[in-house]
Image 1: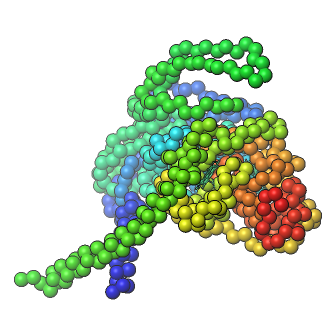
Image 2: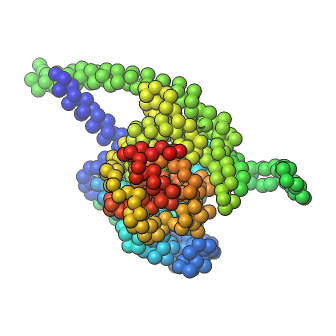
Length: 307
Length: 282
């Protein structure tokens, strides 16, 4: 009797977990293929430069940001995914390479899947340390202390050239509107950056040099396609696919409106009065200012930096 | 007329309902214990911790409003300050688990019991164990991460060799200290003044400073074992990275411990000290 009870509880627990896990793997019959090209027909924003102030001998004085890699209007490094898909083909278990070469992360933008691994490698002759940080949107509503890029999910030293370090991709790392993207940062080299979107379903891709991507075995139906680019932000488009079809779409980032988010306030200084002059030892100086928020979102002023 | 199969189906549905109720009741009573523990944890928290860690667990307690529990100028003029941990992040420094993992209950118990000397977090040794366990359970309610995953297994610290702290071992450790570039942050002489020392920031962009080994106080507590764990696990959310994969060899890890002890001027007390116990001030 007790055993039966136990077995049943276990069944319920398993049932609960499979529900809680969100994505369900099923055999996809007559799946559709989505072939896309991401273009930008507007004027291409200027390519920025980053000036380097550490390990200059090795890294050089300047790096291109490579934020906009656009040739013949085709945009590289755009992440596309099917929003909130509940079931479909199996999630691939693969390594997501995070290679530092010549003081930058390659590839700059990538996707990963729960159950795979982050593969970190330093191809440089100098010390790099990498911190992967999860944006953690929901946390920003419960804590009065804002994060810069996110909360650390890995903090790894890579002091030896060529050494490969694998770290598991967990469910906790997955992208959602409440969690967000994983940012690759480096404490020792502040300009180093990279982005990883982790999904618990397999329907996601990153565009190549030709701006193309392919999503296969998509169960027929109507979906929201989300589109993200470092410079152009997050956008979306409705699509529908029929059984067995190969659908070709072109996405022009210029036509899609950028989502207005709470993170886009705009600030105007109304008045500011400094009175520095000379201050004797032990005296302090006060500084008043007024701010006006002209943007859509709420502007929170949270911390004054003493240094 | 019902077919026997239908009868059976109805019977099993009934059975299922009965058992699921039983299962539900059982878990409900387990929840009862949890609820009591959490209630106690909350009382302890609001009595002892809230002043620093804040009502919402975000580290904005009354002292948090003053912002800096300890504020002082480093030798090189760097500002050195600490903020009470923000539990809403689900990120912990003092773990026995690998980087990217939650700490174990025992890790948290240790932090609460011993305190964190260099950060001004007091020891809570005086509290009964039950209360400390309750408050540990309570601080987990501040972050969703605790519902998403379990802590990983602890990295085991193998028995310390007799030669740890000896000159020959420290000499080998010094080579590792240079090869693994500890000096880039902690400095050649261990004074926390390496070329990258003024660069490091935490998750909020606030400065963090590599430990000046000559000042002595360790966040994890002053034992060779804790040094071993510090560079193996790393401090998540701070500048101190994990060397678990870049220094996998156990003996080499102990050599590095020897050298750090030497930089701290602590090699004497360890060779005469008893197993695993070296307390601050010894």
